[in-house]
Length: 457
Ligand code: UD1
Ligand code: CA
Image (cartoon, rainbow, N blue to C red; front, side, top):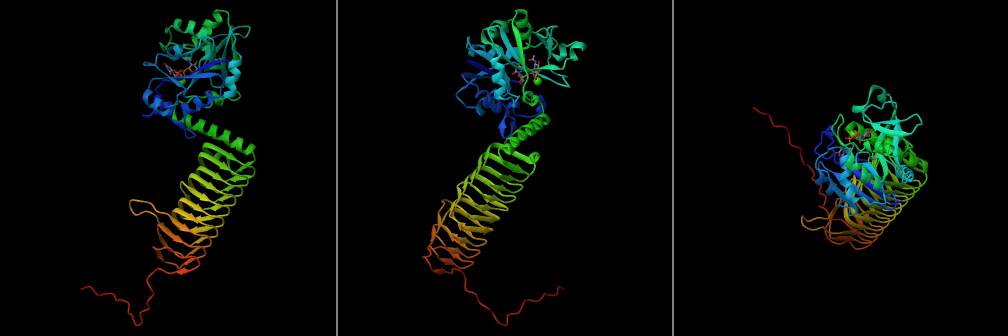
């Protein structure tokens, strides 16, 4: 069925106390509105209109996507008025589905089910039953249990306030009816607003059926009005991802201390310790172990790799099977580690291709480098890749051995099997198989006396 989706996002969000429009606040690293848009896009044969008002320009800029029709609502005169602004974009034969930019956890499956309930002579309303219904519009039903209308909290009688079935705001209506009814809605109510919810009584009055559906979980329909609510929804969302991962064969040390702000996929038997943050797109092979307190962004990590505690990965990076990194390693964009390579503590790697089984174990900076297999880079080795203007490449061929505290002044190449003595400053290429020592010669001065402390008068 063709569906025209209208997302209401014009409100100010005063309680966020923010310069940022509410719908741009992020949940799991993505704006609230982004979650709703992505979910809406999962519906087949649909169009997307977003009603904006407060901070309209900022919101539009954040979503340059060509499939979004932007609708401006200059003054926020109520939810009915908001949808009215979108009418010109609604196809007469389609179903109109109303969503909210600040209700981010709604699931596509729930929406699909709701839309299925719409007929020429019936519309569909998403409701939930709450122990604490205060603040929500209450669903009015007659003796036969048929929905007859919605009454807002501020307009409700004490008896109506006892009703626990509430309006989530999400509804699906034949567009033709929407177009006929919306302009007839008035604003004589406690808030002086044009209530979208008035459609329900009109529909009932005209003999239509108002079908209702409840989501699998009430979280789906919770809105964000404050930062406290945002945090609650963040935790729901993270719990969802954590559960999905565990179901797919990943062990989490603590599902309550797991954060994914992007797309994470994992093979079987991965282990993820506490407080690791995943961002962007991260792909873990099978049997990957991630230690505590890591930050991992845009990375592909092969089978059996181990990322030890406090490692920061700022990809794109590609780590092959059996790689080890950390503790306290930093892997920056363009890092490629081949099978079994090992990066140890306090090592920074940037734009470097490091071959099979090679090791950079301690306190090094390796940038703009091509390193072969079986290379050992000693503690404190620095690639001097930058002359203040340009970047240059360091190449270490297979089996090279770089002594500790070596500076490799790029562009420079160390040949296969060559050895560089500790403390060298290498400015010229090193031939294969040879030993290079490029440092001041040691002098031992006999009879030297340490200075003695002078007396002050
Ligand atoms: C609305 C429903 C209420 C329901 C509740 C669920 C109405 C009249 N009431 O109440 O039955 O229980 O949602 O949360 O619909 N908005 C605009 N333009 C406007 C007014 C609102 O874009 O002119 C947007 C707001 O940004 C907000 C959403 O619509 O995201 C809801 O508006 P709000 O005024 O907060 O409605 P509620 O009082 O929550
Ligand atoms: Ca609200």
